[in-house]
Structure formats: structure tokens, C-alpha cells
Image (tube, rainbow, N blue to C red):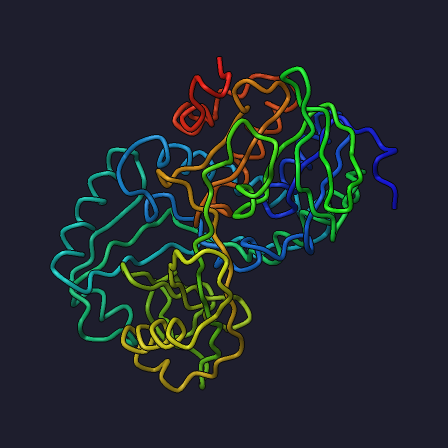
Length: 393
């Protein structure tokens, strides 16, 4: 395969949910697109995620992240429906809600503060006292002090999502190359002209988007390296020993089908339609050290059975780990790189890449096509990490 003979309007480095969704959006804007993936498409952080769509649950405070997350959540129904219509693939988008559990006095205080944010942003939320939580969800441990029920807090099967995005991209004519590692951006006269591969080959492009997740900081040729670091997360999938294990929001049994996501400050339990429960996740800042580890799995499994004692008898069907792309301020890095024309970046989504996929695709798809991308928050621009010494404007 001699990629250096090809010329594309846009080359995207990375084929996770972000890279594939922007590729799909760019094709809709009429661009010729190639996506270059160092491994297998969709098998990085997007594959390792839990698929929670949780802007209020993930926001540390009101601000641009919460607004962008809520906007992306608004886009999710049409985004999922459009993918299904294009590909025939169901991504298991479920408007299930979330119970954010208070297991300590400190957690209760913080959650009551989030209730105030929810009301400010017209997000359906309700505080449930301990007795009410246990009445509706009898499988929970007595330690629960109460819970914040978030009505607009959904989930999707992230693995089905990346599969559907891949199918959609290929169907629309996106050129996808796997096992194709980009090492360097090719620039001249303050403009990007393509990328160089680990094989030494070059790929010409009018525009380049770096969307390589935790590996984005390893791509050379920028005015300075992107400040993205890998944060390892370890997870497990459990199969309850008998049907159930997590109550539905209406009560009446412990079957997880249609039930809410359960989350505390230390753990989340995400039900799947096939009856499994995803348990996660650790957060370890140790570079690209592989996982999962005995210590990490021991902790999340112990936390899971402490939250829902019936899970002590569950079967462990799968364990895995992945590397989230963390940024210094915990917010995504979206936009054009200062001082280098036609060079863009979409990374640093940390643990919210699946939630922010539709809004990122919308904004970055417009930006790479030369259109107004007003929905991209100024707080997410790469400018905050590139100073005057980099030739930025």
C-alpha cells in the first residue's frame, strides 16, 4: 500500500469514536477523507469505555464543559437514529437515567450542590432520601444515605457505536487505513501538507486533524507537543448469578434491563441489554503501563459487591483496560493549532469522549470544512497551551 501517492482534503490521525465521527461529518461536507489508525479502528479508549452519557454527573462545576455536554446530549437521539438508518446497526442508546448515590456525608453534600446546578440548567433531577432509594432499589447496601436521580442521563453501547461509525465511514467513502502509525506532521511555510508514517512514507493532505486520543502527544511536528497524557482505566463485565442485580427506576425487581446507571464517587455500574453489568473504573496516571492489574480489579470488584451485595456471586465475564486522553485542565482540546494553517486537533476528552462525540463531530466537521463552528467553546481551544514563542496569532 503506497499511501504517498494519494492526496486527500483531510487526513485524520486516529480512528476512535472522535476521529471516525469527524470523518463522517467531513464527508457530509464534501471533503475527501483518509483516517489513519496505528492499531485497529475503534479499539482504543472508545472500546474500553462504559458508554455513559452523563454531563451533569461528570461536570466538576457549572461552565463550558457542562454546557457543551448538555448540547451533545441533546444531539444524541438524532445521532444514534442517523447511524442506525445509515448502517442498520443498533448502538443501544437508552434513556435510562442515573442514580448518583451518596455513600458518605461529603458525597451527600456534593450531590445536593449538583441538584442546584441541574435546576439552573433545566435538567430533570430529584433528590431521593435513603428510605426511598432502598424501597425502589432493594438490592443496594444499607450504607446508602440517599441519591440524586438524574432523569437526563443516558447510556450507549460504545463498542456498537464505534462499529457503526466504522461502517458509516466506509459506506460514505472514507478511506480507512489500520496498522498505519503516524509519527510526524509535515509542515512548511507555517502550513501543514500531510503526515509521515513510521514506514517513512508520506501522505499528502490539504488539512490534518490529530484525534489520536492518549497517543496525540506522541505525534511530532507541532510547535510543541500536545499536553495529552494517558490515564489508565480498568474495568470488568459481570454476569449476575441469577437474573438481576440492579433495580429498575420503578422498582419491582432487580433485573438490569432498562434500569438506571448506578454511580458513587468511587464506582459506576452500567447495565447492558444482554444482562451484563459493567463495573468501573480505576484512574491511574502511570503512562502507558499495561493493565488490567490485580490491585485495580480487586478494588472495583470489592466496591461493586459493597454497593450491591448480590454481585458477590456474579460471574466475571471479561476484564480490560484502556488509556483515557487526559489534558492539564481536564477539558477537551478542540480547534485549530495556532501558527500552523489547516492543522486541527480533537483530543483530551478524558472520560467523556463518548458523551461528547456528537457535539465534537458537529463542531469539528464544520471547522475542517471552513464553516462557522460556533458551538466549540473558547475554553477548549488549543491556544491555551501554545504561547507566543510558538508563532501563534
